Length: 114
Length: 111
Image (cartoon, rainbow over all chains, first blue to last red; front, side):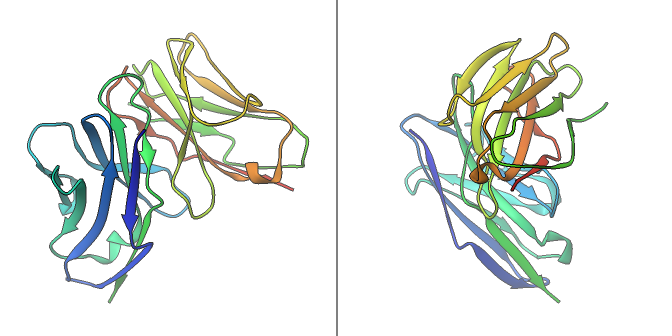
C-alpha cells in the first residue's frame, strides 16, 4: 500500500520569498513521485516527476524537488515566489509496475502575499 | 494536439438518480483513469481502463462503473447517487503506463 502525507494544508509566503511545500511518502516498492498544481476550477497540471533517474528533479515554472529515500521525502521548492504561483499543490505516488494509479496527498494551498 | 476533454462541465442530480460522465482522451492515448476529488481533498483513484478493459479499481462500490470505447474515449456511470458523491470527477489519459494528463473535470452536485 502507498500513501502520501503533505505537511501544512495552507502555506503563505511573500512574493519573492522561498517556497517550500513538504511531502512524505510511504511505499512498499520503489516509487514514482509527482507534484501537480491545480488552479481554481481547473484540472491538474504536472509540475515535475521522479522516476528513478536524478534525485533532484527540475520542473516547469521554476519548481524543483529532491527525492530523499532515507527521509522518504519529496519536498517541492521554488527560490522566488510569484503571485501566479498561488494555487493548490498535490504530491502523488504511484508504483513502478502495474496500472500506475496515482495516490494523492490532501493538498497544500499556497498563498502569495504582495 | 487536442488535450483531455470532459463533459458536462457541471451537473446537478438528486439522490437516487443515475449519472453518466464522459471523457475524450488525448490523441494517441489508450489508457483512461478516473478520479474523484471531494471538496478540500486530494483526488482518489476510482478505476482505470486500458484498451477497453478495466485494468484496476480503487476502493469504490460497484455502483461506480465505466466503459472505454474503441476510440479510447470513456464513460463513468454512477447509479443510486448519494449526497457524498458530490465531487469533482477527473479523467486522465495516458499512453499505456506513461504520464497521465488530466482533463478539467466535471463538477457533480447531488441534492
